[in-house]
Length: 259
Image 1 (cartoon, helix red, strand yellow):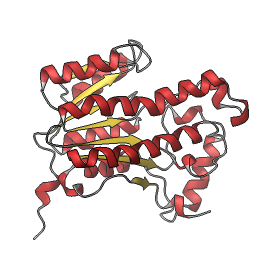
Image 2 (cartoon, rainbow, N blue to C red):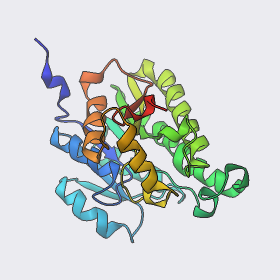
Image 3 (cartoon, rainbow, N blue to C red):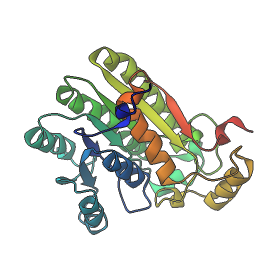
């Protein structure tokens, strides 16, 4: 008989970053974590974002709601300091943070500025590495780190532009961290959702055409939603996935396998 209790997150402590509103991928993941019994710490970008995130944190009964702009010196360290103080440990974290300056994102890759590219890499990729470094001391018995990526990392997607190389770097970082942290019992994943409507995605050029094409061409003939992504991510942080690490897992109705 299979032990379905391995899917439970009861008693687990998790950090969720990147919730902007109730359409966010991070919100879909947070709901799935909570439904399976996890206790969550939630971050919000700034005071402008807080009124949108705070009600969601209450719905999750999250005991920790913390500001986090990874571009602000010391904020990431402060988040992990509060987690260490409140819980003394961390079982999993979700990195669902990405940013590129609009003027760089909307132009050809060869036209992006050095400053814009470095900003995108810092916020969207290096912040995950920084989180991993801070999480390791809180995971003496192992844990799971998950980040969000996109198909534009391996294929040229119209309008994705400079975020393609940035997400490619993020996926590579996840693989290297999986290899380095595996002996400590820490697993690392990148999850690659199909196109779905989020505030971040709305900033991409030609996004409606991308949605339509995915719905028409994906073998499942349907778009994914944040619940689909959340359930998959919750599985990855559970003991049911204890022998899975270093993957980029597509949650896209099979869209990535067609031309």
